[in-house]
Every structure is written in structure tokens, then in C-alpha cells.
Image (cartoon, rainbow, N blue to C red):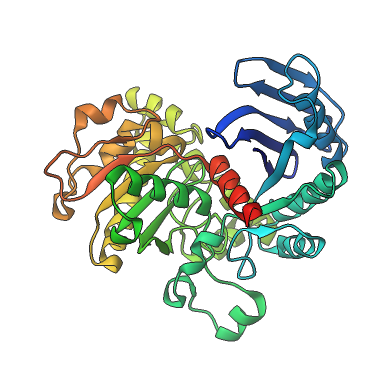
Length: 399
């Protein structure tokens, strides 16, 4: 059975075609610069490529090109789109409405679009892509929505509520939602399998670290708290995002810089984080290159990241009254031995001890990097959100 997995942005349409027998990716690509000019980059599992400029006025034309790339030409992998059994869509914000993977209907698309105020960069683009997909695909091809926020809907009110008037929460739905739910769900399940245990029997802190980062406490197989909040801006310092910051500091800076609300949001989301502190780059690899050259601001940036991750691991251990394992995943988590070592050093109180030499050799492979007598196991686990979306899609349509 073939499942097409789609991750739509405001100007992009990333996709993977997965054969669920063996869970093999047959092809993947990105239709980029939608609404600007257009470009597709497409690659098959055996290395054949399609790379060309196109015209993508809307997501519909991008889907049509996706279909053409999969079915025709030197980089095709199927003869006809009828070979595809279903389409799984990644949706960022499901709020309190969508607590689980859901079959796509016109009403569901409308509701996703209505939630755009909570995720303005993502949800309207998802709705556009869903409508475009319905135009291009036959009506008998089921479409499924998998929500980033759904995994975190198990958080108790004491974790997701803010200290604002309750009527404002009820009226405006301002609360912690959390993100990267598909990633945290995938790696925590992979951890349980690797440990040979039931996920419900272990207490886990999952660290998804990349250009956007979030940390999640998982107990009894459920998310009970997470670092990202109302939006993906909250939590630890990230590539261009500030992470958690005193709300009064925000209003103070807005007045000093002469910025309105939208401009201040852009400042906190795109001009802060690694980029703002280091004044070098939003890329963790370039931060460490600068550190090796003796740059003090780059060192400060790295120190802040590691310090903040440590704080979350410690606090989540406290709320779970214990800790069995820590997961590192995402671009930074899977590939930066320096970050992992910096986080896990001087964590003896929690019983965390890693093999520092082994840690230096691990990049993007499922590996336990803690020593045998470490009370808490530490794992590097590559995430695969597309595969989880495909699995969810298959599971739902099978029912």
C-alpha cells in the first residue's frame, strides 16, 4: 500500500511517497516558491532526480506538478495516481478541537482554516493545500490530517493554563498547546521498543532540538508537559526564536525599538535566538565553528542552549518524580555531540552519565550513549515524522 505524505507551508509543498510494505520511501521532494515563481526538487530512492523551475501560482499547480513528477518522466516511481491508497497531511495547529488523527472533510478543512489565528504561518497554508489536494486527487482517495498539537492534548490544565483571567482563556483559547507532537510520539515509541519496555512503564524527557526546538515530559506514554506554548516561540533558545522571555521585557523592547505588535512578533521569531545572541548565524554548526575560533558570543549562545535544556530535564524529572531515559532527536539532537555532552555533563545528581567517546561518534543513528551504570539511559533517536504520519494514515483508513 502506498501512502503520500504532505507537509504544506505558505510557499512550499514537501512530500514523500512511502510504500508501507517495508516502510520504504520511494520518492520525496519539495515544490517551493509557491505564489512567487516556482521550483520542484524531486528525488527517487534509487537516486534519479528532477530539478526544475516551474509556475506555481497556487498550491493546486504544485500538486499537479507533484503528480507529474511521480508518474511521468525519468524520475517517476508509479504509473498512475490510482496506485496511491491515501494522502496523509501534517497539520501544525489542531487546538482543543482535534485531539487525534482525523479523516479530512470539507468541514474539517474549514475548521483548520478557522484556527489560522493560532498558527498564522501554517494553518491557512494547510487549508489551501488540503483544498488543492481534493481538486487534484480522485474523491475516493481518503485524506487524513495528523496534528502536531494532538499528542500534547493529554497535558493537565495545571500544565497548559497561563495565569490570565479564565474567561480570556475560554474566549480566546490562550493556553499552552505544544508542538513537534509527531516527533515526540515517534521517538518515544522507538525508545520503548529499543529498551524492550512498554512506553507506559517508563518516564521520558524527549529533546527535539533543531532550528525549532521543544522538550517534552512523557509519562504513562502521554505528554504531560512541553516547553513550547501558545506558539512555537516559547521554551528554549532556538535558531532565530528567543524562547521564553519576560512579557514585560517584550513590551519594554517594543517601546524602545518603536515596534508594533506584529513587528515585535517578527523580531522575537526571526531576529533573536542563536542569530541574535551570537550575531553570527542561526545554524548551530556555524556557532560551533565560531567557538573553535574563540568567539565569545558564540560560546555564550552554546552555553545558554545547554543550560536551558538542563533546566527542562531537571524540572520535568521533578514533576514526574523520576526519570528513566532522555532522548536527543532533531537536526541538532541527532548530530551535535557537543550539545549532548554539554547537557549531560554534571548531571550526576539525576544519575545521568554518558560515554563521551561513543557520543562523539554518533550522528543520526539510533544509539544508547549512556554508560552501563547510568541510572538514566540516554539515547540518540532519529525522528521520522513522515513515517509516523503514514502509519497514522494507514491505521485510520484500515478502520
